Length: 291
Image (cartoon, rainbow, N blue to C red):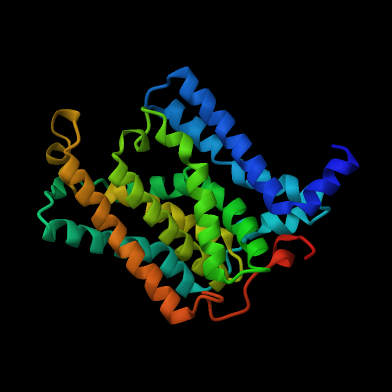
């Protein structure tokens, strides 16, 4: 890479990060779509590999800007955050699930407790989600883009900007008929966007409150993503013969979204929109870059 290109990237860090992130992920997603792969472990692994777009984008920008790559990646190994925050990272997804299931049942959603998996399955999903099924993204979104934005914007505004970029990055999944998102109706897609924006606020709160622990955010992210595994919805009733019932599918999405939105609003009220934390928040220096 020439010095002029590196200089341009350094001057346009966020734009460069977004461009590289999208290019990496969308190229892989394009191959998956073009190959016509059905839902399978192969497809899941390839999509997970595409999920490394955000850390790849961040790494290129930090390198081009003569930043400290070791300091940036070290955020993923920052585990000394206190028992309280690990309890929240692991326990809050279970609270979201409990509230969501209670609402689902209250509005007439069918459940089948016999469908619940063993705890070992959930632990596998949690571990997988942390390193391959979503959590790997956070070195880019939370470990790079968020701190850069927080140099000039409040934590809330920065969260929403990350959230909007995050939504756009997922678009290839919605045009792939072999993915879950590819089969969603417009109403489900809109609810998912609201959930993503709410989740962006939750992840910011966890990142800022732990002094920049991407590991805690990744585990938290994986826990929320893995809630579908523990949801005791009666799949035969929701998708009889493999064909989803639109009203029950919508009910599942709505009741899963409500607790996320409620917690996000509560965090803004309790912690304030400026920091979403009761401490100094990470900026460019925290990810190995000079302001």
